Length: 112
Image (cartoon, rainbow, N blue to C red; front, side, top):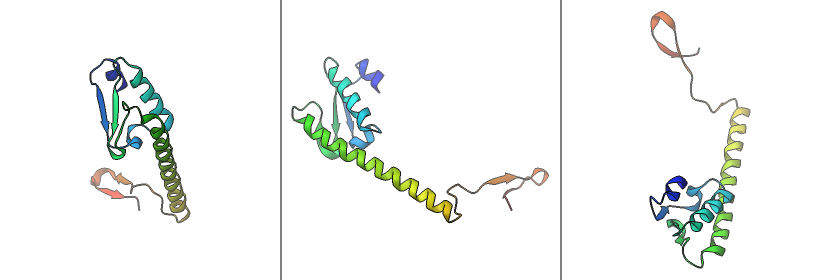
């Protein structure tokens, strides 16, 4: 996407939320900084937050929203790690059932 932006293939990016645009605050900030430094600048609209990077009041508000998004990502990560650990403790490994091919019978079965 950034390569296409530098090539001026579009002049605006519309995304649902800050957390869907990039994985971390740093990635979002760097992308926004680069897009705004292009001539003419490429704006980003974050629909859920009614944000437009081309508006003059964007700077302070985006810092706040990025902090919220980063916290949301970290909470999700911790939740997934906790669930994985808990399942392993309960001997319920979070992997799909493995199927095996048993030679001549040409039957797919689970490992007995």
